[in-house]
Length: 463
Ligand code: GLY
Ligand code: MN
Image (cartoon, rainbow, N blue to C red):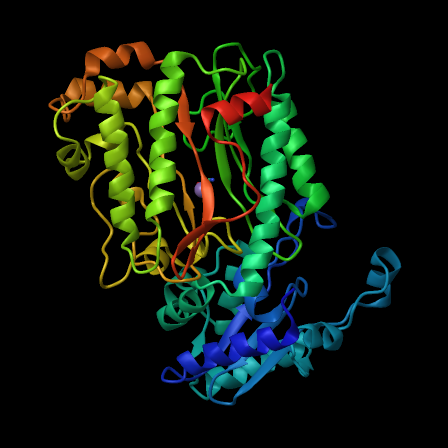
């Protein structure tokens, strides 16, 4: 449970790190998003950074941190009797302010005056890059800017200060992450128990989503559950499970407290991997286990990514699908044919934590630069780890026929890839094994209750 004092401390820490910039910081809450008419809305999702500084609160409000004035203000209108008739009695803005330790609460009309005055006084108005169109339009009107200039006007100093704070998870936050990881484990175990030939992917996705809703606020992102696991973010659940195939399941939950989990497992529909599947599965598993064993404070995460790719290369060479020197294959990006994505990403209140603030602002800095090589460049977090970082570890091997065909036609990295042997793998699909870790003083800890991933324990659990 995050209490009011924590929100006060977070805002004070932010004010402190922004004191050289001066001005005011505006955090717009997310609004309700209509599905088809204004009162029929999608599941409400508060903006994560707003929530980090002002608690969940509600739609239609603005949080302000006045850097020079040393005050925090929550602006919003109280519900009218018409709202209360339909929705029941609602907390007042004053009561919502108390939840995050704010005593100065005012109306939206006051907010408009406040911003107009700040503009007239030439004060700096910092805001984060908005990602919702209604918020962009709202900021454009408040700040008297063209809509297409709102994003470019976002404050880089603020982005950096927020990333610095949110990236390090406190003990309270890790408690919440552990709990939401447990829900992710339950979702996966329900699918493991029910995955068998004849069952539809849609049924399994619904089963898992039901668990995420029963124990929290739903999925942390749209569930990936498909026998076409070679498509990295396959959003479709159109298939029916078929003997002999692999079902890739990538999903996690979001908790009432606003934290996310993210796990991936690859399941043999028949309840037992074929020798060919097992061979590839064991390579990915080794990359997952060895990367977790390597994780500790002050290690360049980009190096752990390269290390995982080398483990994949060594396994693929042993399996006859690659050849040559494993380190060289990683360096030139030949392994990206099999894993065209990064080892993992930051996790927290967003499943890809703070990606809305710019991937490079979260995962890279002046010391560690993003690779420009296909595959390696998709690593979202590459910088040195610190105690309290929460990351996913998710190596994979995929057989993507279109990509293989393209590389083969170009003769790309042919000194490292046995293209002829790959023809036997066009219907294989993909395998990814993903766990969530927190960096600790002496290494890392896998969050949540253990989720089966060894071949024997997985097969035995499924059966
Ligand atoms: N689990 C989805 C992703 O990491 O992109
Ligand atoms: Mn992930």
